[in-house]
Length: 424
Image (cartoon, rainbow, N blue to C red; front, side, top):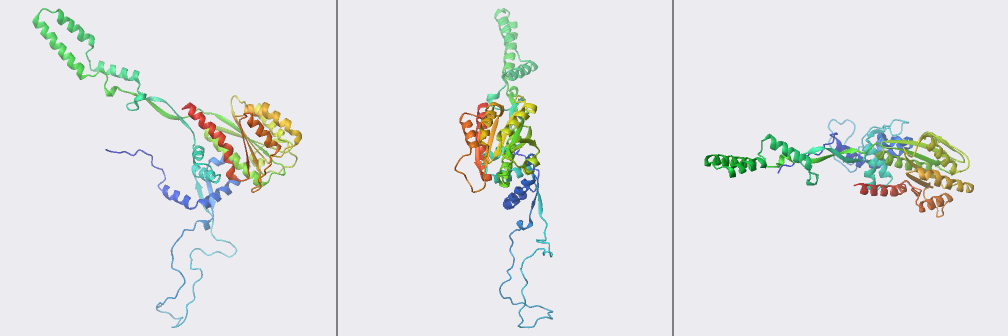
């Protein structure tokens, strides 16, 4: 039996060396990616790119002769030492380039280009995602089978009966296979024939036709055709992702970093599900404004906290630019839970009447300082919890560490798996 391996070979000849390097330098690469994320835009998380790795993290273990112990040596041509002198030891016993005065380590950082898949794997590893979820997020697009003509091999369940019958008929006509009507007509002539000589001729003719029928089968294996399918990307869809964030003074840099990773994860999910994804950044204190990404994360702002101002701004943007009939709308809100008591009624009304009915999914992330978990719930948390109990399409989560971000999306993944089972 001959086995033909038709798996595609990787393009890079040094793929094994590259993978070995990434495994060995995993900790250093993760740290480099973490630093890269601080200056990287959310849209750029899918592009891979170059990261800088310090050379002191690239040292490989090696064997060398130790500098300790006493050695007896013969040094020919020596003019400095005499018998009994003790030779001074060389310092360090190592190798490498010496540091220059005032220049620290003296070696440049090692710059390494990560592919899209490698960058995403490191990023998702840092968030401690389950392997199944990680595989779903790193897929570039989902494919579905569509009809693509016919093939000469396949599953019996995919036999194309009409095409097979048509090809069989064309073959029989080309080979002039006698029809049953022709043989029946000759047999009727034999029965009515009274002349013995003519009867023998007709009988020989019938035998020849019957032999030809046996040689030319009604359906031959070469006639059989199977319906053929090819995987093609799903129809193009578009989505818009609203990023809402409280930027009042109570939001620390750690909280904003958690929020940025939260937005990146949602963007990765949407980008592999939809071909076209737009981002809208809305920040708020006691008033809200639509801004660019750099202003959203880095520009300081002061004031109180009114969540309804951000929801009202989102409602206005949807009405102007993103009709729910043409866009899949997703919203992600990050906050420390603070909100004015007088604003609770307006927040609930906007969520129920405008935001949630137009949204495919709404995710709320209540961020806190690392190691400071609050046992009490904020008023904003209680509001979202009540809406979720009523069946609203939202997920809520408290996080103080980046590894706690993914459970916010667990409900969304479960819903997607259920949809796939229903459509399969």
